[in-house]
Length: 116
Length: 116
Length: 116
Image 1 (cartoon, each protein chain N blue to C red):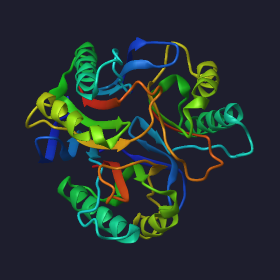
Image 2 (tube, rainbow over the protein chains, first blue to last red):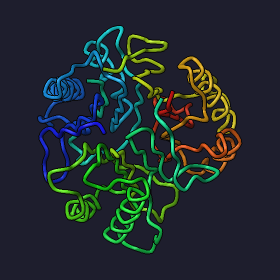
Image 3 (cartoon, helix red, strand yellow):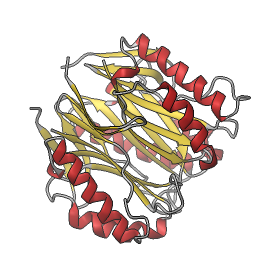
């Protein structure tokens, strides 16, 4: 039976859960919601880098990514940041759809699964 | 090669699929759609408890959770039920977004991955 | 540590990522967006068959499926194609919600996880 390790385990959710050699991150939103889509995407991906590091892995081991954006008009700007961030040769399976987020201030939310 | 066990395997989907020591549940909606958001969330989480038990596990081993609600005005009420249900010290990675569900009567749908 | 193999690995995403004996596919949309919901669903499922084959598996080993459709009025027509395609006795855990997709021409997007 594989071990379970929880990172930044709060009362509602954990920011990351490691099960054996699979790492599940929470849906991450920007810490600074005054930023535009470019800034929020950078903010989110920096948090993901940090959480992956805490889980003992990094973006070169991404397996699957779900992205929610509140308006598809922001798709190209989000992708421009994503394309510059993601590890070339190691891109994950990905899906992006449009959805409302917890507050109108959030423009993008990203949830990843990675290998350890 | 890890074994696959399917629970309540219907013609369209299974309610749960166990692969090795990972348990994938279907998106669960309320069995009684006349309930309000509080009642529907309790209904859904009771079904999840039951399915996790059939899979040989429980909510203390949740890894990842996706929640869809039809209106963010219900976010706080859903969270109130969630916070009282989830196993403290063992919270999963979670994301909640707003989306339309199969019928307008459904207010919330929850899909979890757990360890066995 | 389980190996990672990426299939059709592009600069933005991979079409499939194999981690140990778990296969993560990207969200797949129709290659021909002039098709109606029936045609687009068939188109998507044919691409999924092809990607699962490239990953060394098939639809009888589906574990989990997320479906996004742009309008729930298309739910029954999508399900009619799905029900005829999915491997009876081997159906995955599934959730379907309504969401906007990358362009208005896409009517359905499907993302699966399978065992190898």
